Amino acid sequence: MRASPPKESIDTDVCVIGAGAAGLTVASELGRAGQDVVLLESGGFAPEEDTQALNDLEVTGYPVRENFISRARYYGGSCNLWAGRSMRLTLEDVAPESDPERAGWPLAYAELSEWYPAATRVLRLPDPTLFEAAAHTQRLSRVERGLFDSGLVAPAISLWGRGPLRFGATLRAELRRSARVRVLLHGNALRLRADHEGRTITALDAAVLHGPSFEIRARRFVVACGGVENARLLLLSDVGNQHDLVGRYFMDHPRAVFGRVRLAPGARLPHLRGRPLADGKLQIGIGVPSAIRRAEGLLNHYATLESEFSGYAAAGYQTLVKSAKVVLRRGHAGSRWEVGRSRLSDIPGMIYLLTPKELMPHPLYRLYWAARSALHPRPDGRARVIVYFCEQPPNRESRVVLGGGRDALGQPKAELRWRMGSEVTRSLLALQERLSSALRAADIGEVEPGQGEPRYTDASHHVGTTRMSRDPRTGVVDRDCRVHGVANLYLAGSSVFPTAGHANPTPTIVALALRLADHLRRS
Ligand SMILES: Cc1cc2nc3c(=O)[nH]c(=O)nc-3n(C[C@H](O)[C@H](O)[C@H](O)COP(=O)(O)OP(=O)(O)OC[C@H]3O[C@@H](n4cnc5c(N)ncnc54)[C@H](O)[C@@H]3O)c2cc1C
Image (tube, rainbow, N blue to C red; front, side, top):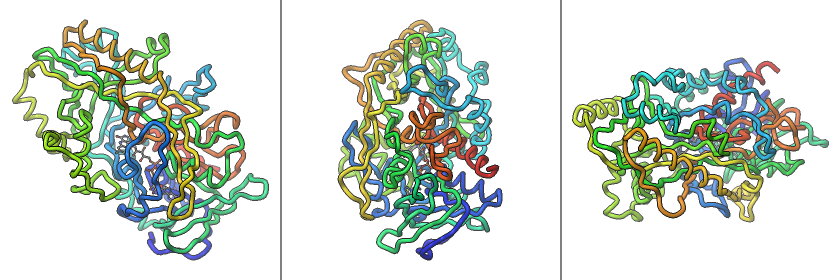
């Protein structure tokens, strides 16, 4: 690994651009397979304000969270910030549909899902069979069983490892020892240079911020800069965009806190609240059964029931959570102090810091859970906020384009025109309605419906901007993640997903990165 500017021209077999979950997985797999790899990373080992600012967006669509809390531009990428919630895309998320906008994946589900077990190992998640609903039937509490037995709602399962895997830290020693992988820190990809006919990438132009420029020549290039920056680099390079598709179909997983559930006294919902496992954590969310979704044309949303004092509950808490993350140097990519914007009344939000999802170490979480279950074996009827995690349908006009402003390297910034779409709220209201009926049918509690329009927050899941498709007229990469029409250019990361389902993207990013490494190793 090196932090200093390299010589003017570097030659390698494979150049991987971006050392996040996707790039680190591809590079380490290829290194283990004996291929010579240069892994180029914009940042260093820790966040730096000026490098992070290279990610600044011009936001002209639906608002998104600030750059520094949403996309980390340093070694390890946004998995320096991620919460570790892991889910899988379902068969229906991946299946092609008749609507050309939802072109579906050009892969049979098995061609994706066969990589999930290996991704589960990479992510150090608990036993992958726990992703199956059947694995939990015997363990659900009486009221949880009643809820799902009603047939009105279906489970949506999330797993966490003991802590969110920090890819950069985990692979650092291996890459330092590797004779095959050279990691170049503080090197920014500026432009992919193609041959005369645009069919082969001959070199990558790169530069150190406030420093020298250099080029990398490689037999093959893998762009793994994240869901926004992948599109930006292709647009800056004028590569792969013959059908004006690069940057289009941007999706996230909109999240809304909307309405409450008033639970009946004694209603124990341990799996719905989230429970510890020996090697991680599990939470079961509530979705709409797939047959009903299909019949009613609904998106694949799910909901969780969270404590009022949860990071999801109120915007004021988020400010404190951000501040705490800055203080604890966890889960941020900058040093902007936010406490000045919070209020005294937000102080209960600090309790959030003691909740397991983000900051509590796993052994402490298990202790806390055991103590709480012993102290409150029959919980009082209490209110829980409903948090909706939503799918978005692909929309051509929801997109990343090159904006008017320039970054410190003189490159046009990315402009994000995120479109929400009324289908998201229609499906949310349908889920709210079903949840209400299921709670009443099982005599567990009541929904107090949300008022007005739900307000959505993005989840920092940047999906779809260089989507995969069999046909170059409907997508940017082919089923091998190779840019259509370019012999030696591949993309890794959630930008290649044609649909987003509701599943947090990282397990699928890792599964596809393993698949891509396997393809590159064989070809
Ligand atoms: C607060 C937060 C919570 C999250 N929680 C979850 C969760 O619970 N579950 C889940 O599945 N996902 C979660 N995510 C999303 C998850 O972090 C991302 O899906 C994942 O990190 C994407 O990995 P990636 O390698 O594709 O991209 P990135 O992590 O964005 O990595 C891209 C890398 O490329 C580098 N780079 C960018 N541009 C250039 C350039 N021009 N030249 C050189 N290098 C460049 C960047 O510095 C970065 O290191 C969360 C994200 C955030 C921010």
